[in-house]
Length: 183
Image (cartoon, rainbow, N blue to C red; front, side, top):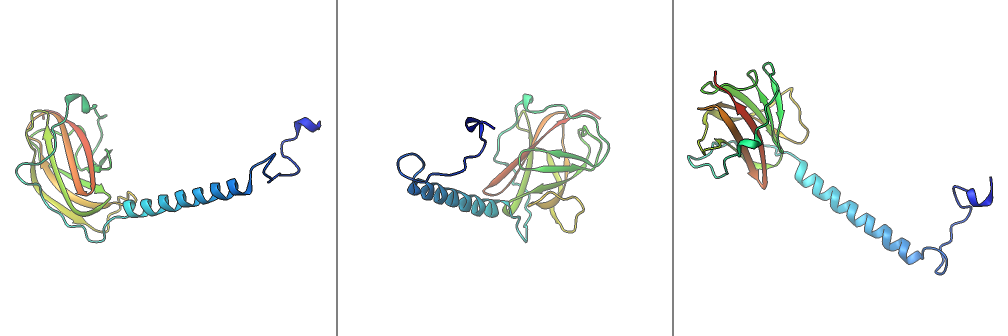
């Protein structure tokens, strides 16, 4: 191999004139160490689920905005136990998709974070869905999403259209959008 085509140098110069100074190497390594430690600390804090989730139903005036109709992409028709991933919120729907209006639908939710779990649903005109039961904490589930806790609910969506289901815990929120259809 010709001298100019070497892939790896035989010597690494750590001097102040031709190469990287020892001070620059130390600075770079310490910066990488600090960034790594901060990343690990933040990831552990934000990704661990709470040990004892406390459920709560939303008040009569749920404080989140109604969805835009364009937010609801049509989901493909699926049989019962359809999993829907939203924004930091997962839904396991115990009914065929699309969900039918005016029909009670059991939905199991998974979300990370800490503190009480709150959930509500609104359509484009601001109408809220009826929460028929829950949220009830679940233990021992076979549905696994890492670093999340699980709750069961029942919802009745009173009309067809685009619905935003919004959940929140201390410092964490998540959304799933459903296109509800007439029965």
